[in-house]
Image 1: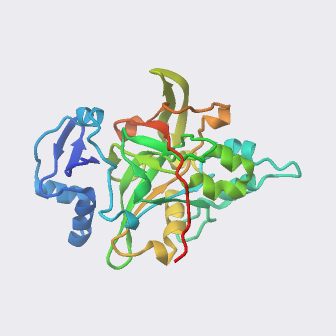
Image 2: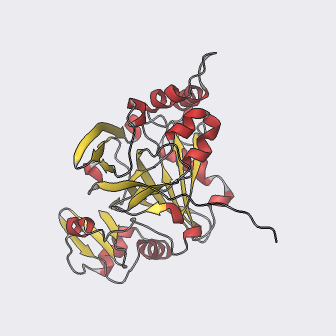
Length: 321
């Protein structure tokens, strides 16, 4: 089962090739809250509502009418976060940026910690991953919309990832809604200057969707990340995800995010990105304004496409009261 959301309001459920509106709900967030209140799976709530009008999901996506699969009505209560160095191929790209000639880089040390302790046995706590903050719902970009790189950025590069969506219940319990593809857009040139600039490099928008898969994450996910320029593919590479290709379990990554009381506030929405092993910058590719990022994983439905643009310079002044 897959869920999508219209920018104008409306939740779409797709099962197989058939897609239709879910009656009674304008937003996926409302649907998830209803499922929590009823102590029932999302599928049960959707079945109870019955099938609404049929829609052409691909046409809606092409027309730019689909939003992120889930949004919070108040962007300040939507957290965008992620974990890095979580995939079995992720260390090489990062290590090339953070090489320490005196020995193993901190990135490689963190990666090895995940390999050795990121998949704990049931009942045990695994090693904590690298963690980063992207921003609030203000930075959540819908499919087809522009990914805006700030004027001061040194780079605007794609990161093809899977994202998990979580809503916090009234008693502080996190509930996972599902997963979608994501573009965890970053500034890799800034990050390369010094790994302590990682936090700065991540304060960028990120794109999500178009479809959210309800249920457990497949153990093995195959996808393709590509960059199009003037209608032609100028860079392309496959990527793998799912726990079979990761150094951490999803449960371990979830635990180390939600162990903080800050992230268990009732009603909040969390979109957490689980890392990547494929970056165009690692191949020496330099993106340009106008490039189209395309992230495709057939197991997750329609591809995610966004255009790279650069923001105009905005002077920053601080006034005294």
